[in-house]
Length: 139
Image 1: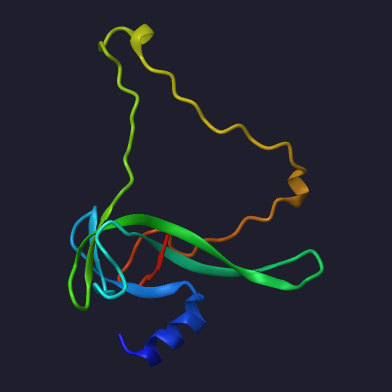
Image 2: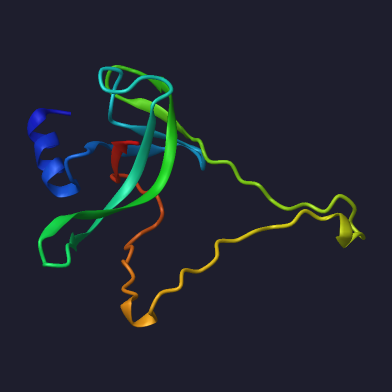
């Protein structure tokens, strides 16, 4: 990537932008156009959506919301690209015996905050799925 392109993309995606998703190999692995001079094996990157501007209470812009689509670990670096693999694990509740609900593990969830529902203003995410061209930043 040349400096002009990176500068243009930082204006579009924020100052943390370092590159883009250039290929999706499978559901756990993708390539980014960031090479070994900017990333090393073991680095954590995030694929994100640069979203709406966030305003302070007085209306002053304080940044843009960045929705994290996925977090990945760099597993291989080359001169001009890196291979990254999902570092997220999924844990499921599995009964120990099919007919015995007493031996299942408990699943917990986050308790809701005590907020005034009229103050809720959701941030709309245009595409929560990782796609070719999505911006990437270091975690």
